[in-house]
Image (cartoon, rainbow, N blue to C red):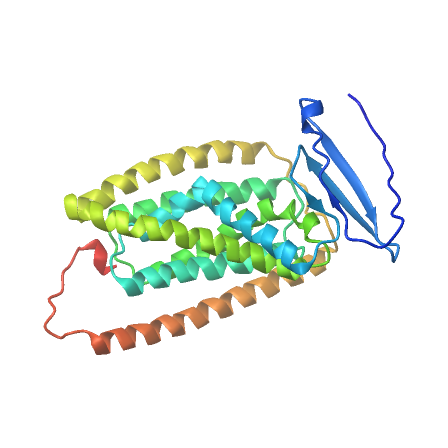
Length: 309
């Protein structure tokens, strides 16, 4: 193990970028950096390996670009988030139900993602493991929903509820990156969320036409059941593995502030989530009314087609 202390005083005011490229020096490298701003405030950095150029005091557009790309690639790398998204859209064929479930999922995970960045997440060891277990549970739940074919008109509400959980999952990836936001916390949060949505849209642009083509070849109901069974199997094993880890962690009280203050913030989150769900309900009800006004009265109805959900 080798520790190196290096100081570089700035001789004039400038926006500095660090690209040390130290990872090749050892099997594992950890860089700890203290950037002292002209006003005397300290901005700490801590990262492993080579993250690329590190802008110590970025412009807002530089931070926005970095976090947009980070959000985009995070959703593409998050296989559990992608499988849940597949569960959501798998039995949906019509535009309005598709819009409702995707919009609900997006709104919900945006709420908890932003709330987490402002210190809502408990710093106890059990919380990330609990969220990862619930994410696996969400895959199992929605997969069985598809298999049973309940045709729930509240599917958007399920997407919203589980979206709150997935938002906490997104926040774990974001928390380590916020050190690179400089003084642009809100801009970086917005950019990361935009990146996640762009990645989600990219996935849907591939996924929805692919499913439509697949269900022209195989029966829609049977195909949806088979795919959902495979998703349930995968989610079940993830849930068991993460559940075992959850049973072994230390269940200490959350740290990071006064307990009463934390409870107040959780209550605020619940109120905001309920308000968002109510607003979505009103919007979807309005969309259904508009959609029914344009539907032909001669179109026959079916009983168990997945596209009617």
